[in-house]
Length: 68
Image (cartoon, rainbow, N blue to C red):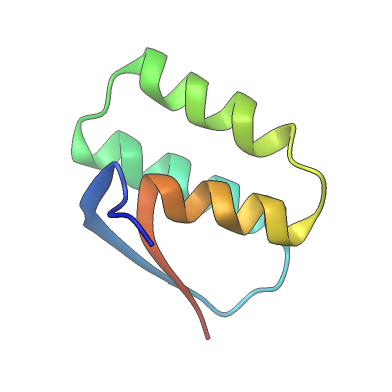
């Protein structure tokens, strides 16, 4: 597994809802100073995902994400 694009962003999710994951990563990207274009690129990719596993894969490509 490769390192995420933003390795300093560490998130733990209790929810199994992929939309919650996308929202949390978006907020963390904003807080970390990511550009609007970067956030939009993440969002477009994550929202086009084909289900929870694909969404989680995209989230982990951008941030250090763990499901609890």
